Figure 1 (cartoon, rainbow, N blue to C red):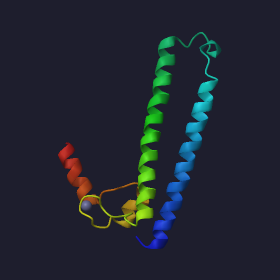
Figure 2 (cartoon, rainbow, N blue to C red):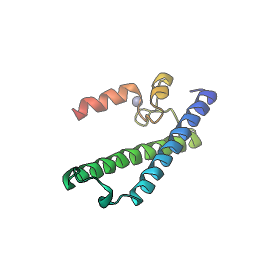
Figure 3 (spheres, protein in one colour):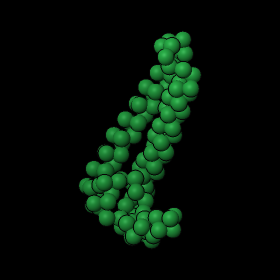
Length: 117
Ligand SMILES: [Zn+2]
């Protein structure tokens, strides 16, 4: 990764980060107004539970992504961005463009997936 390419990806990461935070804020402020009495009668408590569980999972996924973005931004600060965390080789620029939060080169990623199953 050239410094210019890294800066470009930093911009993408920061933009994704602020979108995630904005959507998390919207979900939280939306939750404040969530009153079971406002739901129409045909929504039973089971589907309400399912809806809330879905929102919870979504937030978990968003939080996990947020942590990965923070870690990637920290690696940019430290100058280790784009290095594979296993073998230390540079991760292909094409791969980082598709997935800026990647921490493994394609070889180590394939190796890891082979072990996972
Ligand atoms: Zn590697």
